[in-house]
Image (cartoon, helix red, strand yellow):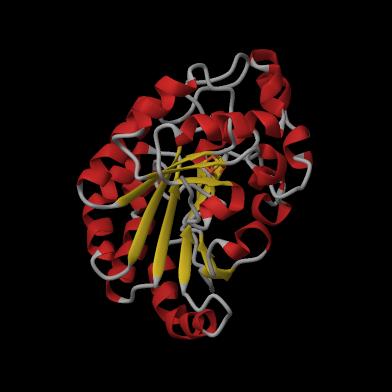
Length: 285
Ligand code: SF4
C-alpha cells in the first residue's frame, strides 16, 4: 500500500449519472481505497476508472487530500448557490462515492474529520455519509455537530448476512461491527440507513432484517443490475462477483431476487428504498 498525501484544487464535484438524483455534489476525501482488496473491492466500479487509478492496482494506493477542508470552505459559497438554483434546490453532499471516508488512513490524516468539522461551520443543506466501515463511529461526535445544523443520513453498506462468498476475500469490516456502528449512531439520534448494495445472496432474510431493525431507520436495496451504473450490470459482469453469487444462490443474479428481498425487508422496516431512488432517500413501506 502506497500512501501519498496530496493537495487538490477542487473537492466538491457536481454529480452526474447515477448520483445526479441523489445529491448535488460528491466529495472524496481520499483518492484510492485501502479496502480495494476486500470483498467490496471485488466489484468496486472505481477500480475500472483510469482517471482515478492512473494504471495502479485498485487497493494498492491511497492519497489523503490533506487540504480537502480548506477547499470545501473555498468552494462552499459558489457551489451552494449553484445547487440551490437547480430544480431540486438543495445543496446535498454525498461523502463518498469513489473512496472509503473512514479507511485506516483516516486515523492518521483525519481528512474526513476535517471536512466534517468544516461542514459544522458551513453546513450543506443535506449530508449523506456512505461507508463500508464500522470506523464511522470514530466520527460520531462531529457527525452529531453536523446533524445539529443540517440534515444528515449515514448509510452503512451491509450487502448480506454472509461474511463473504466462496473464493472471494473477507470484508474489511465484519458485518456484526457495521451493525453495531449503526446501532450506536442511531442511539445518538443520527438517521441511519443499511444499504444492502450490491445485494449478495442472503442466507436467512428474515433473521438478517430482524438483526438490522434495531440499528437502522431505513434500508435500501440495490442490485448490481442497474445499480452499478450500467442498465444490465455489465460493469459487474466483468468481475468474479456474479459467478460467485450464482454458485451460492443461482437466482441472486436476477432482479427477481432483489424483489424477493425487498418484500422480506418490508416485513421489518416501514422505510424501504429500492435502487437509486432509495439512495436519494425515497422510501416506502
Ligand atoms: S470501500 Fe467503497 S470505494 Fe473502497 S473498495 Fe469498497 S466499494 Fe470501492
